[in-house]
Image (cartoon, rainbow, N blue to C red; front, side, top):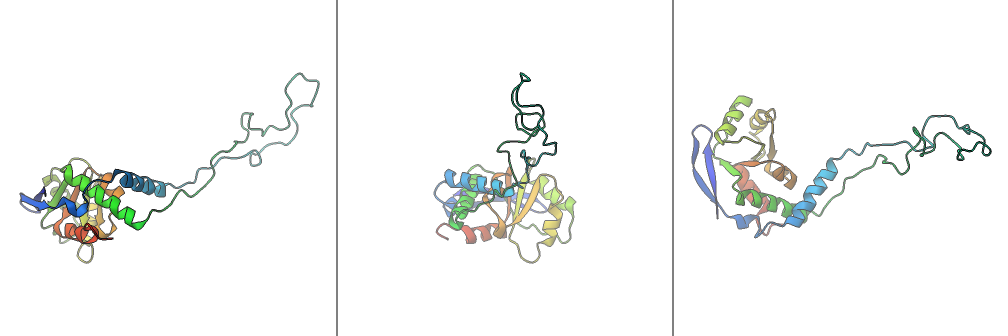
Length: 213
């Protein structure tokens, strides 16, 4: 069991809760976790890079000088790749970098990412994250009470009644919010702290409990 600090919205830290780390797997599967992170990074690439070949470079097609008798190397066009301003040989062209992994592998990667945060003591539970109306100041106050100085990922259970929490968090620097049903391994490993509501943790255990496919 791993001890996780528990905070209340209005009073700060009120104790701790025991989380069974075996719920998220027996060990961190580094290979699967790495593969998932690389996949998410690849899927974020725009792939709009482009270079011009010698056929696409604008310029004259006239032969620069006659073939023989000048003492210089033969040249047929100023668009040649060996000339300054010429085309590019085998340069990058627009392409789609995205690919996918099996669903079970992605779930295993998410389990490993959460397990790593638990073992490193980078998880905090919020007991009653109740915000009646969108106020960034209130959410900043909550994170300050959690001693969050770097980046943070707030995980909520999703569904009705979470709009105020989402709108209160989205304008905070280096802080992102995700529903438990939308969480992925890349989100977890790219933030220093993982802030879970109790309902969000229950939703994650229900979704990723060891043995669930």
